[in-house]
Length: 389
Length: 133
Image 1 (cartoon, each protein chain N blue to C red):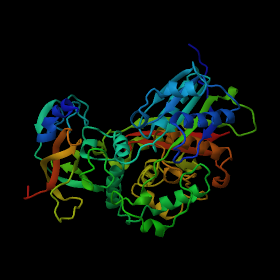
Image 2 (image 1 turned 90 degrees about the vertical axis):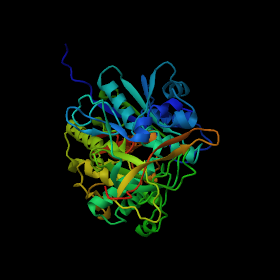
Image 3 (image 1 turned 180 degrees about the vertical axis):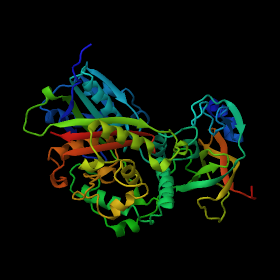
């Protein structure tokens, strides 16, 4: 038995591609772009293991076995490589696995690559592929889609909280304001509350601005222990908290669906590990694939009381200069919803904030950041807390 | 075609047969063999009444493959009188506006179709309750 403490885990480099409709780029090329950017950022650090995150490639691209595909294509043939799928939480789950690998002391340098390639297909095929994250026998068979799940949650939220019909407008306005100045964002234009009110209806009560646009993207992170960090004068960013929690697969089986129990539990565990309270978190990258998940995640994360999360947006408290900045690069709403890559984008964005590299999107004095991605309607939640040193 | 996949669910799909936990009497639908309430084994079948009320609802406008012909359609979370919640389409709505709390009852309808030569999948939907339960 030895008593050496497990190594602390640091982010050595990040890379992300612009999110968009990349018809001229394949899944593997998109991933390579992010991997090369992350490796350049980490001054060429060579990973010993690759952890791929993806949700839809088996269905939309006819491609499984992404671990080896991406390692091979990135010139890393021979290393350990595998892929992780937990629907929209895939990125956070792969990050968690890479964290565990470095933390265990068995891997010195781990590469996390999240990639999603969705725009080769459109319409019912994409809706069907995304609906596979629910319960196939009891949800998808009824024609239930992720947008419909969000519609069900939003109607119930408005009903129980007594919030007005346009209660969520502030989330879309904030996301678009931040997307405007984000170089990797898909939607780079601002909107007003009036734009929100006049937007066409989707799965009611959702309107167009309650729905994040699905797009292609890839993001990568290199994790390592402190001794292997490249020297370069940047603040080191430590993974201070890491947790994955689950709830029921089907929305209808969740005992308290507005409580988002997996998000609550994973945030609680991550905060406990990091030793921070919600008030000490400088920014929160949450998974706003649909606007309703923003107030639910704020409430589950301890930033607002039950049924009151919408007031943070209505009161302008979620902006870059507010007390609870969220979606600081646009979130899924404006950066673009990248499915299984979301958790890796979020982590990369938090790291850029903590190292003062966020440009016009910088949260002043950011020292602690939280990232949380959701699989399904909150069935899986992965939460990570990062601290600048 | 997945015929066996749908055939083996016929009891729950056509007749709303679930389970009851012998330990804590918790009613379970869809059947899952381990009680979500107390964690004990629960394989005793239980016939649900098919009555419940709307917990939430929405309209699907961008339908997945197999549901294009039905779109737009209303899908709801139904709280069954016996306790469990399920997801189902609402049907036979007429001009009646749907509301949270509206009483509904189960009917059997076609759920999806896979083209002219594909399989038709039937199962439960819910309609406004015709008479007071």
